[in-house]
Amino acid sequence: MTTYVYGIARRTHAHLPESMGGVGDPPRPVRTVAQGELVALVSDAPEDLKPRRRDLLAHQNVLAEAGAGGPVLPLRFGGISVDDEAVRFVLAEHEQRYLERLEALEGKVEYNIKATHDEAAVLHQVLAASPELRAMSEANRKAGGGTYDQKLALGERIAAAVQQREAQDAQLIQQALAGASEDRRSGPESTGWLANLSFLIDRSKATDFLTAVDKLRDEAPQLLLSVHGPLPPYSFTE
Image (cartoon, rainbow, N blue to C red):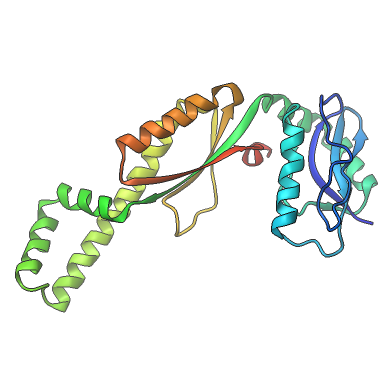
């Protein structure tokens, strides 16, 4: 049977959730595969593994339980190895690199920030910052909405200004939160977000980071910020 891998920890890890229920229906018991100074948290892999909510939560819960006792290098959902021996081979091959990352992530968690614009607020800011756009908008209003070409021209100018503001605000988020974090990674780009950023935070300073997020909300009301965390440091395991 193939082996499902949740994460990697030191062999001396204070709390390894062995026998905890993992992925699968019924849940496969979590166990460890040891090699040198490392262990991998694993279970038997179900034959029909899919990203169902039940299994995604099981994966996350195993890592959260392990992470409460010390640093863990988390694998993203779906990490499957041929068997336990293949897992041992990888642990042996990369032992020193994994130990160095575990040391670097001691006491750290990840917070993910996704940002969008409040459309009404950013439109107000864009018009307030541009006398030319205000004049075009007012001329169209007085003309009963304006011609098709006038509406198109105004729409294109506003869209360009909003896009520029998105780039500026993405930079603003990075600058505002950099001082409260130890590292940062950009997530996959998406048309749904103007920023998708993950921050590495010392667990003892998580409150300071969240305070910095709240301050940013107050100072930049055009931003809608979604905060996810604390999470295992997925984005910083390399």
